[in-house]
Length: 160
Image 1 (cartoon, one colour):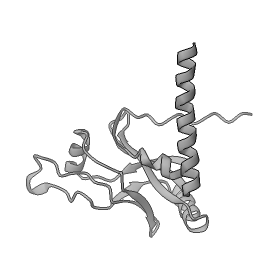
Image 2 (image 1 turned 180 degrees about the vertical axis):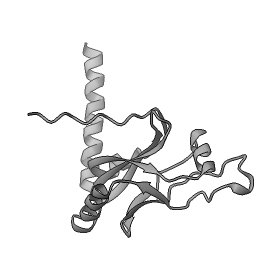
Image 3 (image 1 turned 135 degrees about the vertical axis):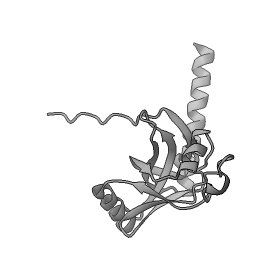
């Protein structure tokens, strides 16, 4: 019997996207993880503020942490505001954490956040990828393929 394909992640509102990650890494597997946030962090994300451009995830003591992500302070947060670059715990199942641990330690892979979004139920989620770094030759090949696809589309559009 054919295994059904898993449904794509239900992204209602994308807050932050790491577009550079797909250029810098070969993406192997993509997972969805919840984020443990405080109240002012959620409000700040709902206003569309936040960045994951320089962030990464790491496995520490059986838990996965999102490191170096920036969620700016909420404008009306007064003294209850949060620290903008604090490490945030990612909510994953034990089996997924074990898979990440094995891949990072044995295969030399990296955990890269691809996007932060709110799903259909209004929960903040992170799209997390197991990735392997590209070298300069691979990056040049990616640029070459992208340029060729652009030129091919232009030629097809001009010559009908």
